[in-house]
Image (cartoon, rainbow, N blue to C red):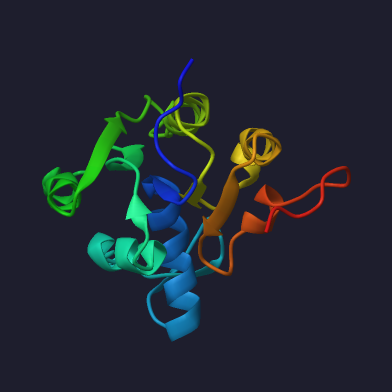
Length: 172
């Protein structure tokens, strides 16, 4: 099989639900604003709005993007958010929440996108915007295949779980 792309190409994938939910708490803590969330017992800033164009610019740093940027998340109460993200050049895939209002299939879809990129493209750079450890196995495989991996997330989240475990050195 012939791989496409080049080693200096950047692929960007965003776990939007994770970014938004953790962002509400991270910004509230950094700025001392918001209301106390009963479940977490910490400040939460529910009015958070993310600027995806600025996020992309910060991640891209002038590098060549390999294909449409991918954002995966749950369907929010208003779909205007997703249209705005599409207008910034992202490919958007959303899934409905289940009967308990819990997110389903999002992490699996992100892993599927990553595996497709790793299978079909010349090893380059993957920028993942996510903050939990669910993607660690696929990221470890990516490094073994010669990919460089960058993790972008709020400082308050557990994103370091993505980087290493007792048997694997940090990825970056």
